[in-house]
Length: 327
Image (cartoon, rainbow, N blue to C red; front, top):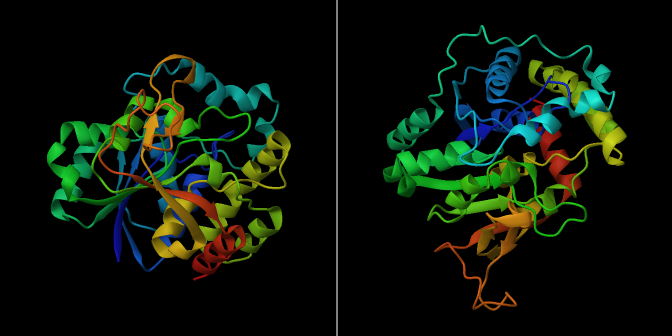
């Protein structure tokens, strides 16, 4: 059994917020090979306090008793104003907030237990389970970087980190949101010695969950699937209207599916760097010696290569999701 911490910016039920974190968490909860030790939250897809409240609501409504810990509210260095304007208010400017009129919960700051203790709790879980914890990092890497910086003794006790982030060569995309929101945090993780598997935007954006797939999930009569259906339906409609695709991408699901069935994917191992300055800040690139055109100028910053998902079988991925959710 893989013991995991899910570090996420979950936004199910929040207008304009992606639901891929929720789909990934649901797959983990529904899979007997995986034990979710904790959910930690970070500002990204939604503000951290909302992610924390959504995670608690998600688990409560779905019937799971998993602790949720609130994490970092701000990136290590990246200014947040422009990001937050787009992520938190873009749906209103597009006139599409109505899609969530039947789903958005009245999440309030009045909720108790909002201390930012996620990093401390992550360290405690890892120390209590040395070499057994995999971190599923599906939001900005602020919490994970803080963990590595504040508790360096745990770095060699982590079994693996599986992350969704990075963008190498996708038309019209310089960077993805997870790495873009906190490039310095991504650099800390990429340059660490922890075994790392990456699901980059290049691969996750080849996935597609259509309305008929969601209807199949909605026809499964358990509380987890009913919650997923209710909160995913408006996002799928929003995605179709704004992205010009016949459904929605399921980015974060790949990180959990990898733990269950690696044969769904193709991989390549590369050194990966992230740009921290200038117009290309947040951009990831391959940094292998021999792969680079100017190898004398740009050297790998890490001592180990990253296992990169280069392709995924979308139909088998969706079949795995539906099969595990139908319990």
